[in-house]
Amino acid sequence: MPAASGSGRDAKSMVPPVLADWLSHELDIDASGREAEWSADEVYVSLPRPGGDAWISLALDTGETQYEKTTRGVISYLNDLHKGRNTGHAWSLFLDLFALACLVFSVTGLFLLKLHAAGRVATWPLVGLGLVVPLLLVILFIH
Image 1 (cartoon, one colour):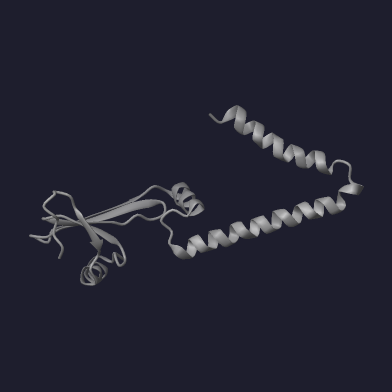
Image 2 (image 1 turned 30 degrees about the vertical axis):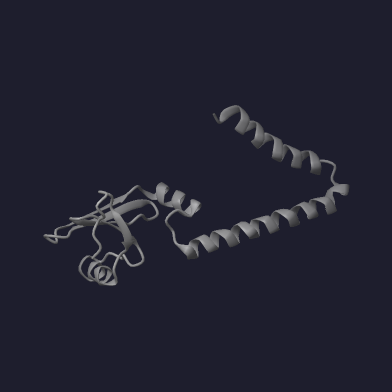
């Protein structure tokens, strides 16, 4: 196992497969592919997740293990999913594809507005209000 350098700073490396397997088998913790911080006397693994956080610390001399898992609730979970925070590559890809689809729908919607605007006088004033009202709300009420 790597040890800390003489500078007093922790060395960082990936969790070894043997340790990841032990954590998975004994504590049902998935630490594979995670970065670990190694010092002279312990290894610390941060386990962030959507809507919460977790960490595990193992003493290298005694094998003592400390594990903490926190949950911040449903709103935090949904907020982290919305932002793609600590969600993995599959969710990030889904968010990117969804954003691209939103752009396509917006552009095609503008083309449909242009196509049908000649018969509806209120089309462009309503589109303008849809842009100006949120902008005014941001300028006036968000500080």
